Length: 239
Image (tube, rainbow, N blue to C red):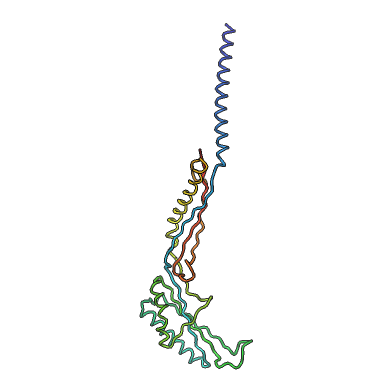
């Protein structure tokens, strides 16, 4: 009787040991698979680009007057400013889009390294700025500056310090759409990589917010902008 009980206990222990070893084997396999797969990932970049028209323009309008009589020069500057404002408003520019800054006065006789045999003492620059979202209208007026020349008004080039500036301010409205497109393009690249490596694409492990940039399409068309986003996405892979 004792021998039979002993055999039963031994059998139970053996069966338990086998079950335990099987469970341990399964656990080890899962652990090994997880360990093997945890570094199976692919990192790709997704790109999205769009060309858009600028939706804001800043046009600095500068004129110069040379002379020796300051009151007369200021009077001429005021007439010039009034004529420019009339040209702008008569052609659709709103008063709220025009700002007139104080004129800049240079006393040439006070220049330390200047010549003393100048014909004129004062150089006065007037500054009018048009800031508008009606880009097409402002561009048309820029090309019609010759009409001011007929009135004896010459608009001088603002140079590097005061260039005509075109912007795309509605950029934030299109960010979600462009990010989605960039991620979609990244997924296509990752999918191709997975197929080439006999794997399947799994979930996204990480993704950045994307690097956005807005540049002129080229030097000749600064009013057309190229919006670009590059995002980096990491996917896990599975068999």
